[in-house]
Length: 386
Image 1 (tube, helix red, strand yellow):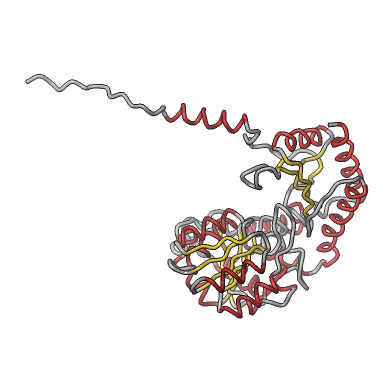
Image 2 (tube, helix red, strand yellow):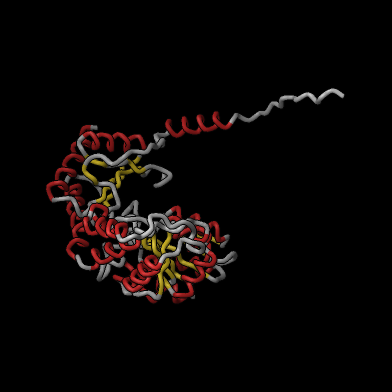
């Protein structure tokens, strides 16, 4: 019996590598191609609002934990071998700081939002989400399989319409300070609507933690609304200068996340040495109100200088967006500023809507008045020359 002949099949679609190359070429033509780039120059882009990523108190806490014999690796998920008393201790400290019953630490803000949204929101629930909510919130809502209403950015009137015209249970999902525009959500209004319509309020405090509140807890604490929210999310890779994120709320919420948040259950536990560093970061934020105020004051100075020069700029907190329109224009201006010694990046779609490519300038606590004035002068000079 003769062996069967192998007949090569012909297909009408391109091979994977051809598809990759085609897609990358399309991104390049649209000025949307991205590449990894190490920091270089004066930092006016990072989310290290308080300069704690460079703070000796934080690094010393981490080094001390290593010399004291704390494990380097976690060895498994926290439900297996990755649990440590130090992690539980810092979660308790964080919950106390936020004046909430409990907190749970995730490996990243993205994982925290993914786990929270997909766990507490059930299929068939109704979610009202701001049009500019972060990708991690959007993806978590999608995983929940809930019914979704997307409202225009910060539109409380549309929020109430969505609550009134849909059956519950309802959830309101918002950021407290939006990272690309730097504007503040009307959380007080949302809390009133949540109470009126029996909705759960979920607030991502990523860019407000460390800058607002009586001890830097965020805007929910600043507005004394801790009892009006179901959960808040606080990333640690921004003002706290480290990594990971805490979800805070009730003890039942924490237990539910431990049992049902897939991004928590199926992730290796965080490095144990992060726990003492996180505690040091909390203390640094609590005990230094002047440091918390400086980035916001510097941002106001930069806004004022740019407005004096004829630019229209908005923003809030420590974020100053300079809207430039096209991606190619934003890229050209960012590169010109890089040549003058600034670490600045162009922000392009899909991170921001089409036609709103921008510079996202951040006035971290390491900047001086002279840095701010020179930056404003250089931006205006470059714009005038184009």
